[in-house]
Image (cartoon, rainbow, N blue to C red; front, side, top):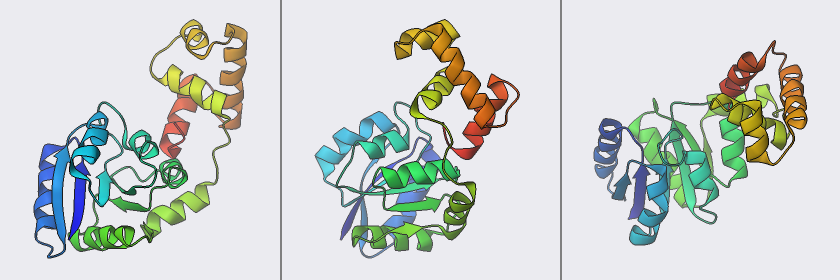
Length: 197
C-alpha cells in the first residue's frame, strides 16, 4: 500500500482527490493538510511514502515545503504550470509534476512512478519549461523583485536584504532590463508569469 499525504488549501479539491485516490487498490491517503506550514508535522506523524503538494498554499508555498523534504518522494499537483516552478521543483528534488486538470488515473500513475523512485513530468509542462529557458535573474534581483511584489518600498527592501538603497535600485533596474520590462510592476508581472518569483 502506498501511503500518501495530501497538502492543498482548497478543501473541496483536496477531498475529491482523496476520495478518488481511495478507490485505487494500492493507494491510501493517510493525512490531509490545508497549509504548507503543516506538512512537516504531518510527515513526522504519518510517515507517508509520497507527499502530494499544491504550489499555492497559505503558511508556506509548496515549492518551499518541497525544499524542506529532502529524501522524500514529492509530487507537485498544481494549476500553476509555470516553467520557473517546474525548474525550481526539480532543483528541490521533486520527482513529479502533474496539473490539477489531469485525470485521477494519471495522478495515480504519477504517484506509483514517484513511489518506485522514478519521475513523472506532465509532457506539456516539461515542454513549456524547456522553451522558456532559465531565469535571467540573479538571486539578489529575484529577492528584490519578490519583496517589491509584496509592496515593500526600496528602503524596506534595503533593510530586509541588508543592502543600501542604491544597491537595491540597481538590482531592480537590472531585473527590469533583463525582463524587457518598462518598470518595476511590469517586471514583477513578467517574472511571476514565468514562475521565476
